[in-house]
Length: 65
Image (spheres, rainbow, N blue to C red):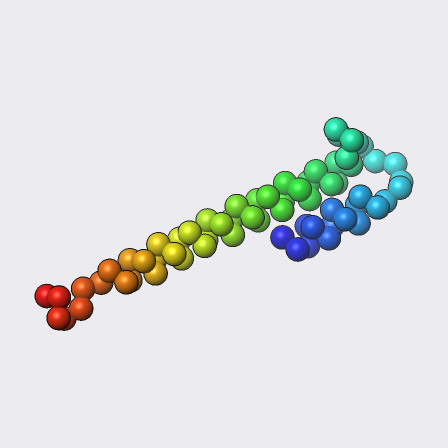
């Protein structure tokens, strides 16, 4: 995610000709999409890790059996 943020910044600073879509260079949009994809993966992994740790907390101990 950090790479795509940096890439967005550098692409935004460029002044050469490029294809523009909705006011931004196409390269900027690609960086934004990859960043959002990375963010979605990060959130998904964090939620899965929390579920796993929550399930581990619910394992019965020998005293509960």
